[in-house]
Amino acid sequence: MDRRQFLKGLSGAVVAGAAMAAGCDNPNSVAAEGYTPGEVPTDKMTLRPDAHGVQVSLLGFGMMRLPVEGGGDLRSNPDAKLDQEAINQMVDYAIAHGVNYFDTAPVYLRGMSEEATGIALSRHPRDKWLIATKMSNFRDWSYEASIKMYHQSFEKLRVDTIDYYLLHSFGAPGDFDKRFVENGVLDFLLKEREAGRIRNLGWSFHGVQEEFDKVVALHDKYHWDFAQIQMNYVDWHYAHEIEEENVNAEHLYTELDARQIPIVIMEPLLGGRLGTLNDHMSSLLKEREPNRSLASWSFRHLGMYPRIMTALSGMNLMEHLQDNIRSCSPAEPLSADELALLDRVADEFAHFPAIPCTSCQYCMPCPYGLDIPGIFAHYNKCLSEGNIANEGTVEQQEFRRARRAYLTSYDQSIDRLRQADHCIDCGECLTHCPQKIQIPTKMHMIEDYTNKLKDSLV
Figure (cartoon, helix red, strand yellow):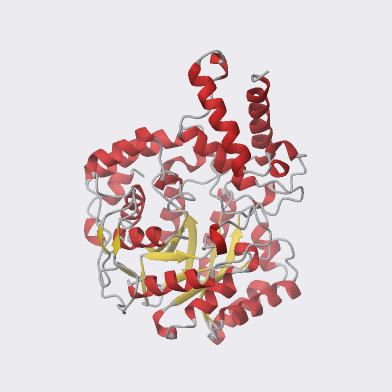
């Protein structure tokens, strides 16, 4: 299916609905560099119906990248805590500006996300927000451990009902049956939906196509209320090309749309990478729309697909939240020329030699202490900024500049005991990576490259 053919005539699908508006002390403007300037609307959020007609904000708040006390991060500091006051402020602002879908999970942010989310949301009337959480039984899928996790989610979130409950991130062959069917967990959750404690039952997918197709086909038996997939303008055609085991979003969306299953989108910005493109890709979009952020293109693209109920964004800065609200208030359809431009950027992005890590941190903690997402983020940043030195030009000034920039920032951003050279190929991370990255292989590539740069100093 060609995207332009699919989207032809759908420009009217983006409908702005009435949204919640409330007072907020935060300024209603975006001034930070790189974000859309101007006012942030309080009453223009695009709304989409769920399986039961409940109106859901197109922008969903993903609670897996939240502010940390002192401005640090949880990867590098095992004692770091979430900044609850900052989280409360962002949640307040989101609700006041029309966002009503909040997504968390027992495993997010070292297990702290659900509780922080529950504290922030419980300060607002229950009819002002919708909560999604998950059965994250990755390491212990026994019935007892899974049901305990389920009940703990209610306690941490401070709720009697969960609006959207997901079977979390299946994907490997046999994964769905092992974690949810054979142990009786799915039967239990179906009864919980029937009792009304779960309002919508669905699942999130990262994996091989045959597992996805199998679970979608079970819709006639289980009547899925929604499904969560990874989709953005790059993954539409290039997910499989970037990593062979991944499935193009075109297939995922088409199969769910054919069964009229509402869709939740994760990674609309690929872990932020589509909001920080390299200079050439960025210039292509900025020349067309100089006052729009790079991130806004992703949300406008997703808004073109009517089966999408909400698109999740992990936001730890108010500027991110404000900009994303603007992009969805309302989500303005892309023109045919703009779609062609996104296709061009997507093609260039897919063939850019970056490591497709979205910093989801499912691979963490590494049993040998590596900061896996941090190492990949550093490498990708250096690549994007032109600081990956060409080994064939060791005598040139440009090589020396890039070498210095790479090695200096590597030691500054990643503790030496957590760098790539400490990988021992244990493979523990491989089964947890939603992007199917061959993590040990990439670690050795970065280790070899780093060592060559150091050796060239001699």
